[in-house]
Length: 355
Ligand SMILES: [Ca+2]
Ligand SMILES: [Ca+2]
Ligand SMILES: [Ca+2]
Ligand SMILES: [Ca+2]
Image (cartoon, rainbow, N blue to C red; front, top):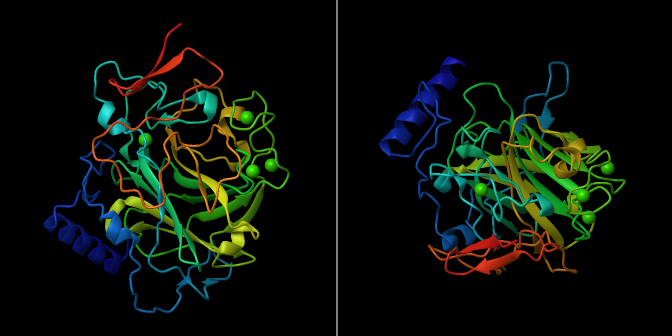
């Protein structure tokens, strides 16, 4: 770390300590659970376009020595969000309760809905991959997508971690595009292409023989890398950052050109600790149910108009500008439509399987 960077780091830590914002500053940097800070701006504020001072698009360092530096022509502004998923399962809230297990309806392997921000032996909870909600919107020039995590943090060791969005252009439950950011620093609050990549599934085998459902065989997943940290046809295609207002909010921006002329799509989000394998999607097709852990994924929702229905959809309509529920019961997706053992217990706010 250079002297200048160190000074900036210390100043940032002191400033954040003064503001009593949980941070990963200092020794013993957390991957322990931290309180979920309510530093989220109001929905109203988040939805309002913010005037911004024009800044020159940045130039970013080359990926590797010898490669050209990345010269940008445009860059995203303040995100505009118009859709928010109903509240995701909060494992950070449930983890310390007696008898915690990974189970439906939060975790429904049969419909590609994973709520596993925990180690395989359930002994560790990773707050920085526990998704609590996700949003999407567009200002016409850019699409924006964000996910809110239980807490801000990064692994204590060099274990890689990834935040991602999948986009299903024809809404058939099979993702067609994958946008991901790897190892996003805790202090990256300026838009950057570092660690950002976008892939496409050109041969349509994401999802395997049966879309959304687990199959024991997959294909080559997202096999085509379209954008690699500024390399590709458009050096400005996709960006990521942490929200300057809340470090546990990871934000993406991408150009409408990524959507290949489509104005509507189905989308969902994910967070994974450990190696990330675009070629292995859908992960429920390529991985055994009892070995895929340290991952959280959301249900899906349609942007710009729904075409057809599939079980990937969230059970609750988020509505175009619906404010998040405070404490009420939000019914998650049906755990398994093929199994009629499930019934909804309104009082307990959970799906129950009676055999
Ligand atoms: Ca979650
Ligand atoms: Ca598709
Ligand atoms: Ca499948
Ligand atoms: Ca493929």
